[in-house]
Every structure is written in structure tokens, then in C-alpha cells.
Length: 96
Image (cartoon, rainbow, N blue to C red; front, side):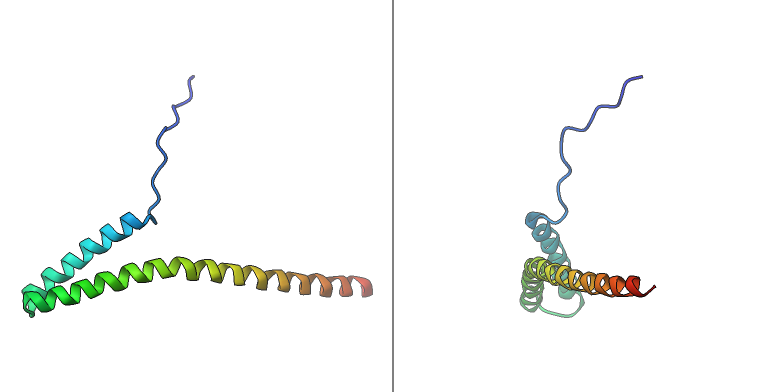
């Protein structure tokens, strides 16, 4: 029996900035079309859709930074809690 060949191309990350921008651009275009058809003039729809695009792209960029900071804080908190648990465990093991 032969083993199946390994795929040579690595799968691309879904978190790449190009994919985020493309997906947000498509969503903004959809928002623009829906607003233009529903109620607004094309200028108002364009302004709202561009604001939607800018907010989503900016929030996406900032969320990576916030996620990294929160993970670092969580790691520090868990290390402190583990140290406290180890000290309490050692104290209880002395008296049992």
C-alpha cells in the first residue's frame, strides 16, 4: 500500500488582511445597494456604506492587537493563580 501524497500548497489563512478587506468591500457594496434600493439616494447610501467599510476594517485591525494584549494579561493572571494554588496545596499537604 502506498501512502497518499501530501498536498504541496499550504492553506491560506482566513485572517489575512487582503481577505478581510475583500469581504468587507463586498459587504459594503451589499449595504450600499440595499440602502439605495430601499430608501436613500445614491450619495447617502455611498456615505453610509463607506463608513461601514472603514469601521469594519479598523475594528478588524484593532481587534488583533486587543486579542494579543488580553491573551498576555490572561497568561499572567493564570500564572499567579497557579502559584497561589500551588502554595495552598503545599500548605494543605503539610497538615494532612
